[in-house]
Amino acid sequence: MKGFFEETLERVGLALSDFGEKITLFCFCGVHIEGHKGLVEYSEECVTVRVGKKHVTVKGEKLAVKEVTKEELFIKGKICGLEVCDDK
Amino acid sequence: MISKAIYEAEGTTAYIVNIMSINNVQIYDVVQVSPETCRFSVTGKYTAAAEKVMARYDKKFTKIKDSTFENFMKKNITRFGLYIGIILVTVLAIAWSRMVTEVRISGTETVSEQEIMKTIEEYTDVPTAKKDIDLDELEKRIIDIKGVSNVSLEIKGNIIFIDILEELNPSEIVDYNEKKEITSKYDAVVTKVVLYSGTAVVKEGDTVLKGDLLIEPKKVMPDGTVTDIRATGDVYGRVWLSKECVFTPTIIESVRTGKSKTYLIGLNSDAEIKSPYKNYEKEESEIISPFFPIKLKKITFYETKEKEREFDYSEERENIIKEKTKELESEIPEGAEKIRTWTSEKTVDKNVVLVIYYEIVLKING
Figure 1 (cartoon, one colour):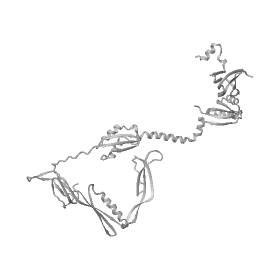
Figure 2 (cartoon, rainbow over the protein chains, first blue to last red):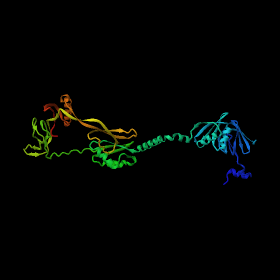
Figure 3 (cartoon, one colour):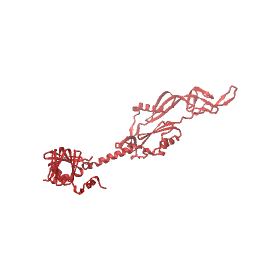
Figure 4 (cartoon, one colour):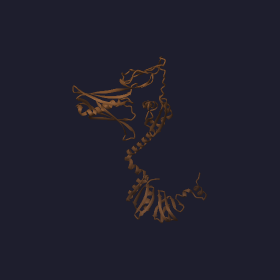
């Protein structure tokens, strides 16, 4: 039985294998990143994470890295913005 | 709640996060404490791995706090004896609270406590578990004992309280037509005769011996005929009690040598402890065990030996007379009137013969 996410991807014509990385925003107070490749920069106002071939910058206030594993990373704080740019 | 260990390590947040995640070490709550120091937490599972990673990357670190289960076990592994002791005491206390260990009997005057205890022992051993005692069944068995009218049983704590209500003594039924005489129980001089029925054969001033007839079971009717009846009445007389003691110039007494041996047994134990000494004195007492809250019986045997010593009667005369007079007084029957007491002493071949006399007046027909 397919889950909601898989079914949604199928309807919009996308494959699950294209999505090794996933970024989930929780009520603008937490960001969960799956498939990260490490932290580039950290401060309480700005956290930059390498995700795949891109850099994801999380902007906000009182940002803290709550949990880190090899594949997942959770940032907690007041999220004001998410920026994606190419890996330099 | 998962307990963690907190570290402070050299490096930036990004650097620490990256080296840990590359090496598959899960970390939590990463905080930049200062520009060169970062603080993070790991669970007990990852403490060794985290320290290894930091050592490999030559990063100095300090363990701020370790409240992981693994650390707790490491610290307390040598205290297992203490924990086992605590568990053992707790288990024993719980087991103890579920047992009956003592029986207390009250209300017995004519019925003997030994008889009641024997009935209890036939039903169950003491100490025993509370659940093994059926109070109704025990009550029935105790009521079956001769002399017991009713019984109340209650278990409070570890003690079973037994309150006995005894049967009343049956009233004496006297058949006044039954021919029965009254005789003397003492050698006495009659002082008073109280006659209810029958014919008195003694009067005031008469000397009677033990067994002599005092009141005859006969009545002389007005017409001269003699009828057999039951003699009733009281005859009082003066009686003399005496006690003779001989004191030699030397006496043999038992003195303790200083050697002793003590045994501790359960309070209700029937074990018979034999003395290790040939001549001994025995002392028994109840104590509470210093290790567990149970009562024990303490039996001490003191070795003694016989020792001869000189005895000077004149020095101890007063105490001896006092002591022997008291002994004689204990033999006086209840209800007797004490008139006077005196002593006589004579010396025969260095021995002193002491005789104590007591004159009393009492009912001589018993």
